[in-house]
Length: 318
Image (cartoon, rainbow, N blue to C red; front, side, top):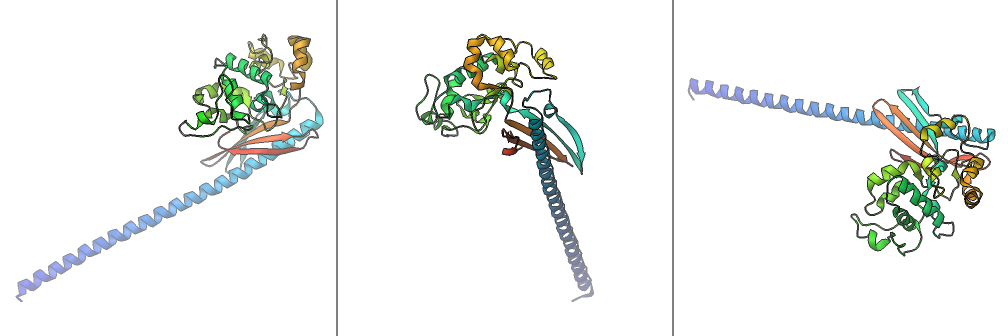
C-alpha cells in the first residue's frame, strides 16, 4: 500500500471514529434527557398524589367540623332556619400548602324527588301535582313530573300519559333500564329521554333526592317551592329579596304563617308533610393544595337525638 493510501485510510478511520463518538454522545444525551423527563413526571405524579391525599384528609376534617356544628345546633334549638350559624358559608381558611372553604345546605328545603312515592311504593299524587307546579313556574313542561314518578316506581307499567319504562329506555343511546327504585342523586333524572341538561339546570336548585320520604322545612324552602304547596299560592316566589330579608334572624314563614296564608283546609291536608326542622344537610368542601383542587360533597344525616353521620359522599360532582 502506498503512503498516500495509508494516509487516506487513517483519515477515513478517524472520520468514522468521530461520527461514532458523536452518535454515542447524542444517544447518551437522549437517554439522559429521557431519564430526567421520566424522573420529573414521577416527581410531579408523586406530588399530585400527595396533594390529593392531603386535600382528602383536610376535606374529611371539615366534614367532621360540619357534623359537630349540626350536633351542637340540635342541642341549642329545634328549629332550623337560614339565620343560624350553620347557614353561613365558611370563607377560605389557610391550611398547610393551600386553603379550605365550605358551606352547609339544608336539603329538606328542597322538593324531595323520592317523595313522589309513598313508602309502600305507590305514587303520591299530591307530590306529583306539587312537582308539576314547580316545573310550570320554571317554564318546564309539567308532564315531566309523571315521567319522574314512573322512573322511580317499582313496576314496569308506563304511567299515563307521560311515563316510560324499560321498552323506551333500552332504545336510547346508550341503552339503559329505568331505575324502578328510589334514586340517590337528583341528577339521575337526566336519564329521562330528552329531558336534558338545560331543563335539569333550571330544576336543580329546587330538588333533591333523599334516602327516605321527608317533610319540607318551610323555614329554608325557596319561594318557588313554598308557592308550589298550593294551586293558587304565589306569595313567596314573587319577591325573593323580601323573603331573604325576613329570614335573616328567624324562621319565615313559620307553620302558623303558612296556615294563615293557605287557609285551614289546605293547611290541614299538608301539615304532615311540613316542618320547621331538618334531618338532612349537604356539606360542600373545597380544598386547594398547590395546583390541586379537590371538592367533597357529603350528605349528612342528623337524628332526632342530634347524632350526625355521613350518609353519602361524592367527589368532584354532586
